[in-house]
Image (cartoon, rainbow, N blue to C red; front, side):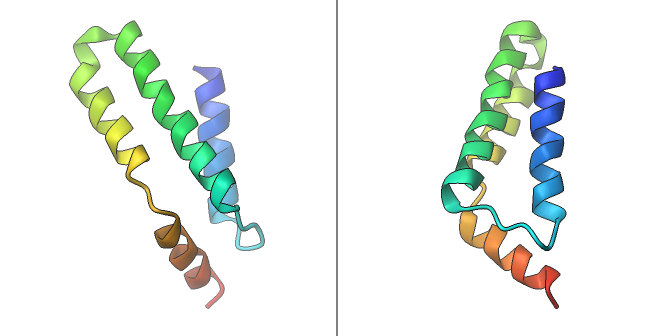
Length: 76
C-alpha cells in the first residue's frame, strides 16, 4: 500500500501545483496506475469488491480536458 500512497500523493501534489502541467500521457498513466490498485484491493479484500470496482471506474472515467480546466482555474 505504500506504493499506492506514494503514487496517489504524487499525483495530487502535481495536480494541485499551479506550476506543473501533466501531459495527456502522464495524466492517463496516473489514472490507469491508480485504478490498477483497485484490482489489487479486490484480491486482498474480496468483501470490498463493490467499493474497489466503483473506485476503479471513477479513476478510469477521469477526463484530461477537465484536468486542463482545473489547471486553468488555478491560474486565476
